Length: 212
Image (cartoon, rainbow, N blue to C red; front, side):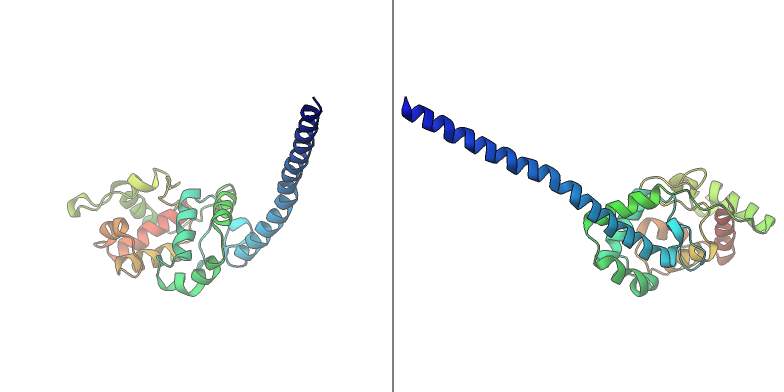
């Protein structure tokens, strides 16, 4: 009987210690969450240096991130980090910035910017915008160029890994079309779409996208 009580007491002590450890483990994430939030906000502020407050860029060189699809943002940050996106701007700006990001931080950044209100469109030259709208919605069937809307959505709002284009800076979009057309940025699907577009057609499409 004495042995039974000793074992029972030992088990009770063990459970008490286990409960204390569990309680400590439950408290730790709360204190870490505060630290993680502070670190995330610091990273968001760093992004804002180029991409604007809450991802609404005021410089046409740098794209708007606000309202972008989380899937696209996450995929591109990983591409910058592993250097598989190798266009000149990526190498100059984003390889170094993304190299220090953890996978969890990448996911958090993508979710944050995706949740921000998107930048408003800016009016363009009516005739150019109208031409771009037609190209975006209809493509060029005679040259087997599909409509942009088939991947990016009817209002260019983006779908999954296909980015939001609505309200994006026209100069940024034009530069990306050119680097993809010239295979300076690896994007096989997009290269197939834009390889036969003229500069005039590109200018029209980006003018339309910037306007909506």
